[in-house]
Image 1 (spheres, rainbow, N blue to C red):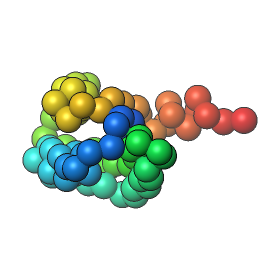
Image 2 (cartoon, rainbow, N blue to C red):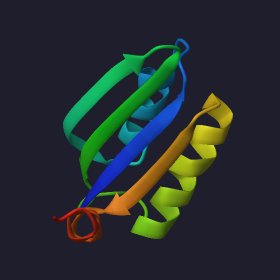
Image 3 (spheres, rainbow, N blue to C red):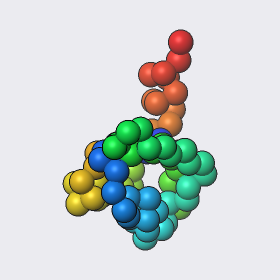
Length: 89
């Protein structure tokens, strides 16, 4: 299963490192990543592969939301199929 992760928040040191480290701990593979700084704000999208994840999707998503709180950013995780359906024109 693939998922789309988004991160939004005030830019500061350690956001990418924190998210990447947690994904590694959860055995989640990063397939693609795009990040940018817009003014004082950090934004990032990642395409993830969860087929070998250490936890089920809901637990993984909850773990990442909690990480977002600890990092001072908002992290959202959506099933890629649902994300694609929601964003079709």
